[in-house]
Image (cartoon, rainbow, N blue to C red; front, side, top):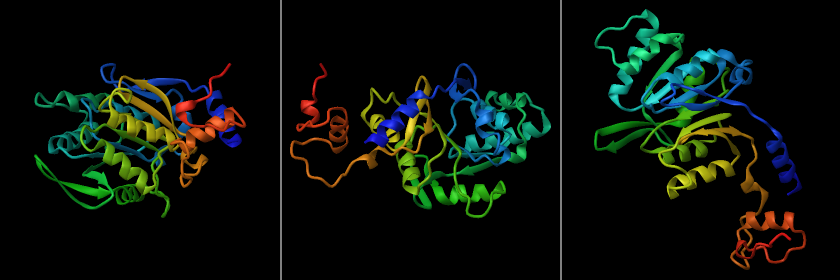
Length: 276
């Protein structure tokens, strides 16, 4: 537990300045010095964006700032078509009367069209299809999806990882995150547009709570758009999950109480010692 407290002190002592990316109507929080954060990787930064909001700008803002490729993953055919149109706009710098506002926004950005890779699928634990009301949607293993992209951008064989993941999907949000953790990926930065406030919805609460227990720290938020930073501190590993409870206590809480109040016998959360 002493190691845990030192880690907590180190994390709390960090002052991270933040800004926003994207338009003011749909801002995402971001580390202010994000270029310094990824400058050594530059074009080899692995940026994956799953799902699309009402604007393409958050994705393009980040790709433009870092100069890195973008792996765009989504399922609606209309959205896939619009991202292909964005690649054309970035190449020709020309729009027409029929160009949607979503696509027109890209004309102001400087991102190489060859650096935008598009996949139509739902990231998952399995390769296959997902039956929906709109028809079958392909699913693709996270590992295969990321491995293919890392190879496309020229990373060494076996170097398969995600540096930053942006998640903005209404459906399959929790299962997509679960499959990500099960695959073993831990992006350095994680941007999530939660469907609901974690403090007001049980399903979102469970996902957001688990996120911070496995090593992610919440840095900033704009509405339901949250920015997390990976600290590599898995709080689940600070206690044993095989010890039977004598008073229905939670093992993690028990260890925490013992660390704060040495010698405490009753460590049940129902009988938390009151500081005097």
